[in-house]
Amino acid sequence: MQLGLIGLQYSGKTTLFQTLAGGEGAARERASIDVPDERLDNLTEIFNPKKQVNATLEAFDVPGLSVGDDGKVKITSGFLNAVKNNDALFHVVRAFNNDAVPHPEGSVDPARDVEFLETEFLFADMAMIENRIEKLEKEINKSRAEEPRKELPIFEKLRAHTEAEKPLRSLELEERERKALSGYQFLTLKPTIVGVNFSDDGKDEVDET
Image (cartoon, one colour):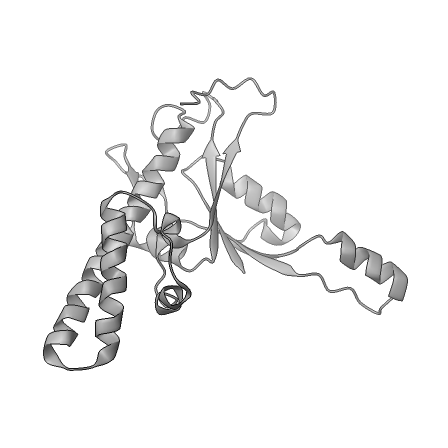
C-alpha cells in the first residue's frame, strides 16, 4: 500500500514524512516503513524465528504544490498525477502561526485549506468523468458492444454525485461498480485522513467552524 502525504507549502508534511521514514527518507520523497505489530512481536518472542518481517507501508512525500508569481497556490498536472498513484492520502493541514514561515494563503485556516484541495480534486474527477462519458457515448454509437452500455450508467451516476459537489468516497457503490472503476484513479474516491499540525506549545488559535 502506498500512502501519499499531501499539503500546502509549510504545512509540515515533509517533516512528518522524514519523521516516519527516519534516516531513509531524509533526502528522498519515498520510503518503505515497517508497520508496528505487537502480535507479531509476541509471536517472534515465542517461536524465535531467524528473522521478523513486518508488514510495510510505502510513504510518498507528494511534491508539486507551489506558489506562483501572483501569490496563488498552483495546482499542476504533475501534482495531480503524483497524487493519483497513491492508494490512500494523508492530508497535512497547518494550524500553527509562525511569522518566520508565512502561510502560502496569507493566513492560517485549516478548514479553508482542506476545502481547497478537496475542491481541486473534485474538479479533476469531474473532468475525467466527463471525458469518459463522451468516449463511451461515441463507442455506443459506433458499435453494439455491451461493455460501454454497462459502463455508461455507472459514470452517469458518478457525474450526478460530483455535480452535487460531493466526493466520490461518499457515494454508495455496488461491488460490480467498484470493479468497473478499479482502473480509474479518481482522487476523491481515495481513502483520506486529515492530520492537523499544531505548534508544540498548543497555543494555536484556530477557527473551528
